[in-house]
Image 1 (spheres, rainbow, N blue to C red):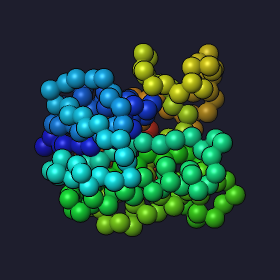
Image 2: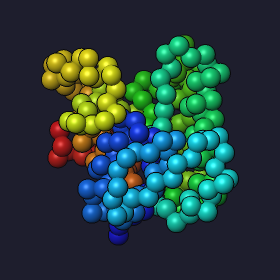
Image 3: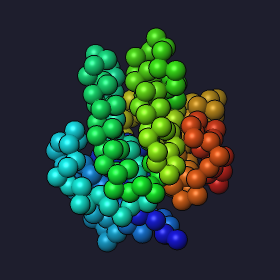
Image 4: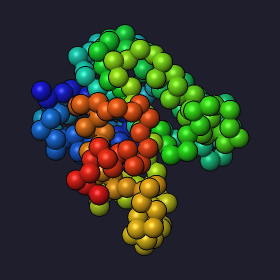
Length: 222
């Protein structure tokens, strides 16, 4: 049956790609996006909530019920940030939404966009990897019906996307080369988003999904 989904981070690169894929998918019945600023897309099955404070969702909890899957795509770069600040944006804000989502939708599946190289031990030397690992571990242990950690690597962005990371824009001429020589750490945005939709619909046998797992779930794309 078609499912109802929540997406955060749809003004970012992965979230934007996922939103377009969900709009196009006949398996997605309703989409709620929660953003600090408008995504600028209008569609009959799309509802948007502008919510400036991602540390407190108590004011919109009535809008968060009745959903099957939540895709948490919000994130910030760790460049130039202290661990305390990066933890706030990555861990604290994720937990601030995950807790009410679980309370309001106990049968919900949650999919968290993490990153290749995330440190599940939380003890490594790389700050962002430790913090992402802490966030993954917390989500996996919360008690959601299903929880999946999505670890994309290099992503070939959608043509014409508004929110493509500047790095991809500057190095666009290298994308075909990278895709050819590093297939285990790169995928298209189409592969990533179609795999995420399939995971939300049907689940999968692994809880932490690396690039090759995503390609296995969406083999028709790459």
